[in-house]
Amino acid sequence: MRILILRHGEPDYARDCLTEKGIEQAKRLGYRLAHETIREFFTSPMGRAQETCAETLRLFPGQEAIVCDWLHEFDLMWTNPNTGKQEAVWDVPPDQ
Image 1 (cartoon, rainbow, N blue to C red):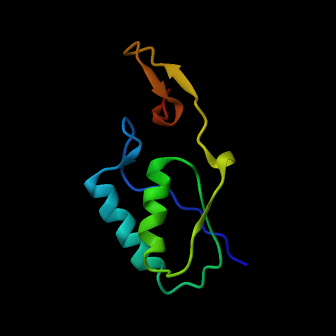
Image 2: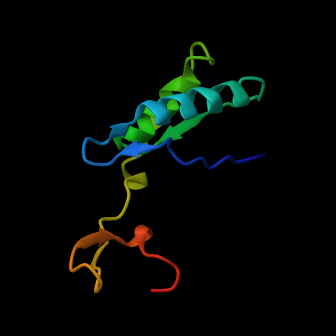
């Protein structure tokens, strides 16, 4: 068994969707996976993740993704000491 874990395409975090570039990335991902034997698809409830998955599913007729609430990202914010702004922890530069 192989498990593929994929990240969503370029996001518009404010609207929880993909940008035009993100949609193109998701389409390319779908074409890359089109020849794989994939039995099940899982996605988080986040719009950007579902949009990314949908582009792949277009190439897998009859397949649907199972939405797993537990895949929702963590809401971990920190206050950047340089800017004073709230930022997502995954945006923290490595030297912080």
